[in-house]
Image (cartoon, rainbow, N blue to C red; front, side, top):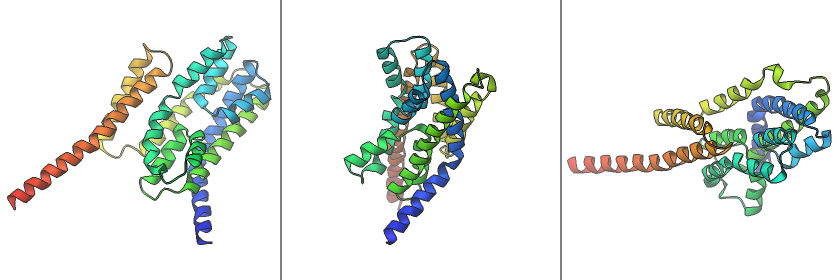
Length: 245
């Protein structure tokens, strides 16, 4: 009974922590829905992409490529490239998922997004990993994206040009807000700025999606090597203190 109450509390906490992001999900889900209607998709097709594919960047690219009459394999390859960053995010959160069965990990992997990753990782660095909390965050974001998509397909007939609303920067602002809570040291700030600049430079020369993979890999390698260096420095300091004693 106590365990059930704790799980419910964790689930509600996840819903609450995701609440500020759900507004952005509804907004951008609506913009996607409007763009999907302009590209020639039906309401059900637009909503099906949000329910079964559930990748914002991939869905925006899909509707743009459909409008340009791109082929199926070209669309599929673009989505795969855009989502290669999920491999790095999954490696980052894997230590917190080791207590779960493979079936649960596979289910939770479907809900992995940039925002879900940032919210849950920030939580589990401070508190014990809780499955109910992950579901609270995930379900909140998933349903808000689907709701936004549906609203967009309904409103699309009255707003012919979604880009004219000038809402593009709010997506950038949301990511900056999520990144802010991760910048807790000088090393992280320098890594954030370096990898951001690297992504911008690579985006000028490489196909869509690869710049994210390269910048993400660089951040992963820095994060992987930095703790080892810090541990080595701490061990050397401890050895010096023992010698002086």
